[in-house]
Length: 393
Ligand SMILES: Cc1ncc(COP(=O)(O)O)c(C=O)c1O
Image (cartoon, rainbow, N blue to C red; front, side, top):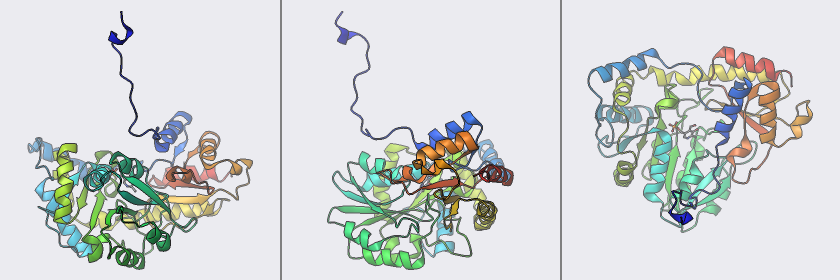
């Protein structure tokens, strides 16, 4: 028999040849295998408010089990509109300017697919969240990588300005920032607004950690700046805000013309997002306390973790927001400090029993600055156990 007539899987040419299993999956698997405390992947090890779970049950029992409208359950979009106005002073129309998505991940991909044409350039600021560049490449775009200043992770506006060309379609900004835990100030956002004003560059503003900002500072949403809001997809994630990362529900706020293009892709991408969760979130959002109190909740955990680390030889980097803490490993008393960050993290997981993520994973060229990221969205006991193990270094 001709071998080609045998059942066989035809050969594929990868759309994403450089993409493998993400470091988060690798480190979580290694942590599980070795019994290490997993401070690698960013998710809480504690439960959400039981009231939120009860609200989902009630929504299901009330029969909210069929397709919701394509842009999302109206009550949830209305609740988001009220929040955008109350917190950031942005009046947006829930019918034409807010869309509910399957988490921020889908929101970012859909926004990019909606506006990036083959050959368009999109500026990403490294280190950055790992989905941005593959998303740009899936759209046929070109990722233009501009480093944040190593050490401080501050935006370098000279370098950003130099990266803007007639082909630049968008810039992705993420504040509070994963992995560094740094936030953009009002002055930074004003500078971005001035820089983009004479251009047609769109802003994809990844604000999933908007409610985790410390030391009395305010989240500087793009929504606060009219010149940015008029050109921005503003992306939020209920998973981060309400300790339900597995629910994968988020929102995108954007001007009507941008939302119209976004929804064209959204309706053939996921079409809709699961109904009972949306109803539950809409009900739960009626009380702003859970998101207004989130910064204080995580600041306490950050302080507990930083105080513990201060007694070790890890170098503490600043942490103004998110649930991540970056540390330098260059001054540790062990020879493994010389290893590449990725190998160091494997060693730390296996031998010390704490999983972390190497910063090099957030750079296209694997830039190694001897810094690793811990996630402190963990029970206090989990953090204390990790600190006890890290104190050996
Ligand atoms: C910066 C950033 N953007 C987006 C996401 C994805 O959020 P979601 O779980 O809502 O898809 C994450 C999750 O880790 C993130 O850290």
